[in-house]
Length: 276
Image (cartoon, rainbow, N blue to C red; front, top):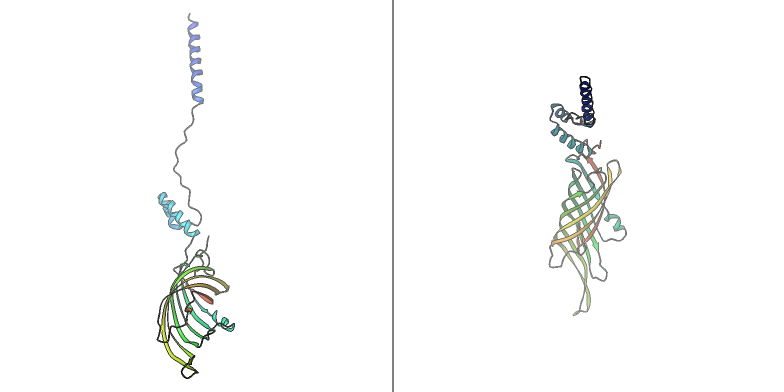
């Protein structure tokens, strides 16, 4: 009996150890929790790096995101450039028989390469004898003024290339005369002619503008615009209404076209932002 008891004790210990072994094999080690934050990207602003070092990781991460966006989509400066140009398309058209012309200088201030206030000033004149009519219309050289703005849809590109839509408010104080007005005197049965001199009028109208501008050499560029005219008011005299309006064209027309050569003066050294 004394020999049997030690043997039974050894068996019980062995069974107990064998039953606990599977539990130890299924235990999964627990990894310690971490609270690490990835460092900012190379080229990040110095203030952002200081926030990382000070422990303000949430604010630093958000600032790093904004900083990366600023470097990827950097805005142009407020005063990007100033462009002055000359519209002269009517001059060669007169050589091909057009009876009128409007020539103007324009100045465009480019803000953020997006919004562009525009001022246009010019002179217009005309000389026309309409077919099957009994007079000749002379539009004396008269000034016109246009004030408005463009919106550049290529504001993320270089300012040398632009696609714009714009509006203008336009005004012209004009002078004209009508000569060689012919009529037949039925009583005397003879043809008579007379002139109507020193007529003056004015016109107020608006324009919707669509245009393109492309660089040709250094700071020089070419530009085209198509314009839709809407007459607001104009003056008339006892002799009738003006046929031609400087800067507008024939009074009954609604469409216009300009072609200009321009020079651009940069107003900021960082005209073209870098995309790092």
